[in-house]
Length: 273
Ligand SMILES: NC(=O)c1ccc[n+]([C@@H]2O[C@H](COP(=O)([O-])OP(=O)(O)OC[C@H]3O[C@@H](n4cnc5c(N)ncnc54)[C@H](OP(=O)(O)O)[C@@H]3O)[C@@H](O)[C@H]2O)c1
Image 1 (cartoon, rainbow, N blue to C red):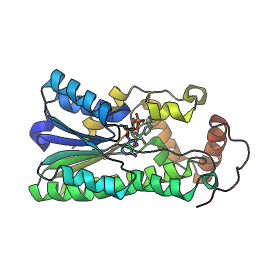
Image 2 (tube, rainbow, N blue to C red; image 1 turned 180 degrees about the horizontal axis):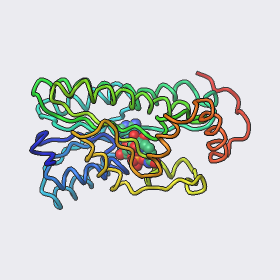
Image 3 (cartoon, rainbow, N blue to C red; image 1 turned 60 degrees about the vertical axis):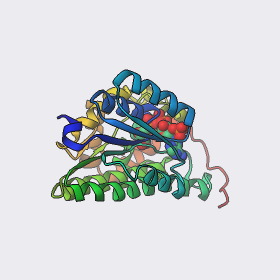
Image 4 (tube, rainbow, N blue to C red; image 1 turned 90 degrees about the vertical axis):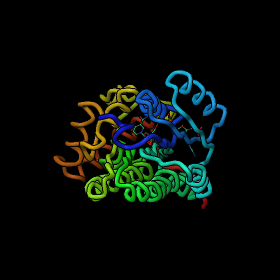
């Protein structure tokens, strides 16, 4: 499918300066779609914009905003008020790991704001405009973590489960309004976020995928499928954990796997609010 002809000239990608977001931006630019990227680090955004303009001859705008705050999300919507955003990809997210009670409420609230509230607000804002025009696309970014209970990553896993359920529902609901919605649920992917977890995914029998392949499969789902889970092993895992195995087995199994992978030993003291 020609994304530009189908959905319009402009795409907005949050977290577009690194990892899967950067790979999505590159693929869109290669198709001649103009880009708005959002992240916090302005010099990094500027360098990426310059190289995309040179390589693909597309227009690129950048917005430096902290998406774990309401003000950051407002800034994004205001900054592109005059543009017709045809493709929205709220990709930026933050992760948490360890005992839920070992982190402060401040950090849990920031995660919910960034991983759940911000994507929901952006979808409401931009998909309303797309529906009014009768065309557009939204690619939400969940995770394999959203398909099953994730002990020691409870907040992140639950946030990604929201994105998955939200996007799956919108896929069917928004079809009638001319808006294609799909959810990309990557497994381990070679990015700074995955590296920061310190998890050795290979030792868990999981393959670490390339961001470019993951991005390609996500974009290919638009207009075709509700869900894209890149990688055969990841698809099998999502199917088994969410459809075949009893939930209590899955929770217990992941507690063991994640506990080992994250080297969890004993509960830390409870953090203040
Ligand atoms: N990598 C994996 O293994 C994996 C697996 C499953 C799902 N995912 C999902 O894929 C998506 C992308 O992950 P990734 O691994 O590609 O991440 P990444 O390489 O670490 O990139 C994160 C991006 O988000 C931006 N960002 C971080 N905090 C931000 C904030 N507070 N406000 C605005 N922007 C912020 C970063 O730029 P700045 O730092 O400059 O702000 C960067 O552009 C996420 O939704 C993640 O949950 C990843």
